Length: 193
Image 1 (cartoon, rainbow, N blue to C red):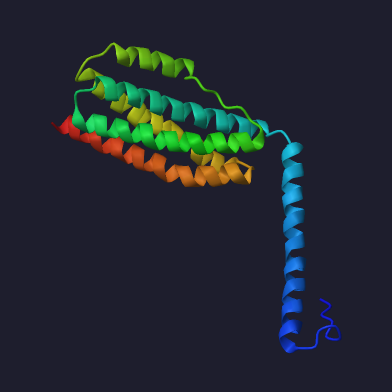
Image 2 (cartoon, helix red, strand yellow; image 1 turned 90 degrees about the horizontal axis):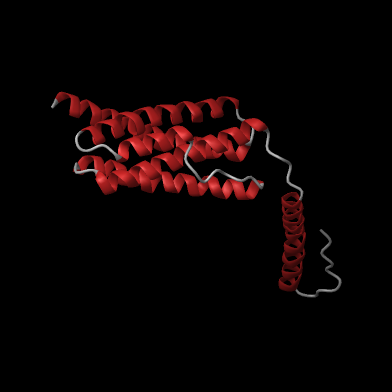
């Protein structure tokens, strides 16, 4: 940094001149980084098939938990199941919102409908009454759905390459594990009654 003491006669001005020049030097890389980020957004490289498959599967898993949870909020008569369903709707919507943000940043498009199997499950559950409705929901969406999601996220954490998706998976997996434990606990309690 070139602080010219000849032009500035007082120590205070010299310090101010050095600070201002330092600020300009520090600001330049920030501008370059911003330009770099903008240009990389314009020329996004396509996601690898593994990353696209993970995003699609994670989106569909979240959608299933949201839609099935909404169904249970409408149809279930059991307070504990409704509590679980409400958490599924809220927390999986948060997870899906985060995934949608990542997809937008990466130029990817996520599915916005249920898989064929989840549509069939939704239709089947919508025709059931208590207590079969709650039992099947907790066993299939609560337990099996979260076991499948846990496996999906753990596999991506081991094999995935995209750092943003790895971070998303790392942050989301504890929620999935929590939901899985809740489902196990609720199913164990209903079997013991």
